[in-house]
Every structure is written in structure tokens, then in C-alpha cells.
Amino acid sequence: MANGSHAILALHWQVNVIKPEGFFGGMLAEPVARSGVVERAARFHAEAAAPVVFTRFTVPEDEGQLVRNTEFMRAVGEAQELFRPDSPGAQLIPEMSGALDVVDNQKLSGLAGNDLADRLTARGIDTLFITGVATNLTVEQTARHATDLGSPLTSSPIARRRRTRPCTRRPSRT
Image (cartoon, rainbow, N blue to C red; front, side, top):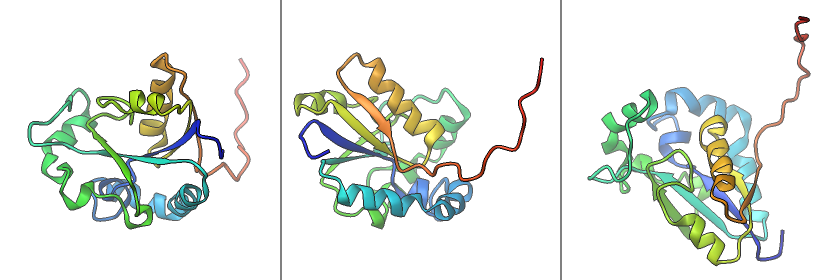
């Protein structure tokens, strides 16, 4: 990963998503803490020989490009003051301190509603390693978006906790 064609895209490592006092804290804080993903991702970011770009889900005063088309986005829209760029909930968590490159948007994909994909391509980045906690929302959406852009970007989600127990359910026979 030492060559210049790689970058880490660190998605929504912010108080509203990770910490108990954040907007989604009641739903996400405990499983995130139990999983150890914050520590693994912070270590990965620190040890990687690649630039780290953080994205934050924020809602500016004019709502930016927020689209209230799902219950999730409607809930964020109703609580948008908690997502203002300068609000405590929008800040990166302390474990992710030292971020030099932070991009804000109002979309689930870290590559939507901003010029980040173009900026990465202009820097010669063709491979993204993605970290984040909302795997089925943000991480997968961003990985799919990278391929949908038609750019040379490829993605590889990392820092997720691997399944440690075998599945005990047998497939049904039809």
C-alpha cells in the first residue's frame, strides 16, 4: 500500500454515529464499542502508508443536498441542528484525531454530493480502502458508488469484524 495509488476513505467516524451522546448513539454506540472496530480502524489509519480522507455527514443551514426520501433521512432532517458542520455531533471522534482531509456531504455514500471522486482521481488514486461502522448503509453504498462512477476507482472495505462463529442454520431444501 506504499505506492501513491491508494487512499483510505474513512466514512462517518463522527460523534453522531459512534458515541452514546450522538444522534444514533442509542442504536450504534454499544455494538460499535463491543466490536472494537474503532480501535482497529484507528490503528489501520495510523499504520497505513496511504492518505486518509474522512467524510462527515453534515447538514448545513440550507440543507445542502439532503433528500428526505427515507425515514432515516427524514429523521436526520428533523434533527438537522445536531448535524451542522460546527455542532459537537458532527465532529470526528477523538480516536480519529489528526485528520487533514475532511469532506462533508448529505448523502449515505461518501462519494456523493461532493467532488471527492474527482479529487482522488486527479491525485492518481485508483484504489480505496474503506472504513466505517454503518456497513450496510454507508460502507456498501460508497463501495458501490465508486464502481458506478465509471472511474478507475476500486474499493476494498476493511476494518469490519469478521464472523467468528460458524453459521448453525442449515439451508432449507426445496
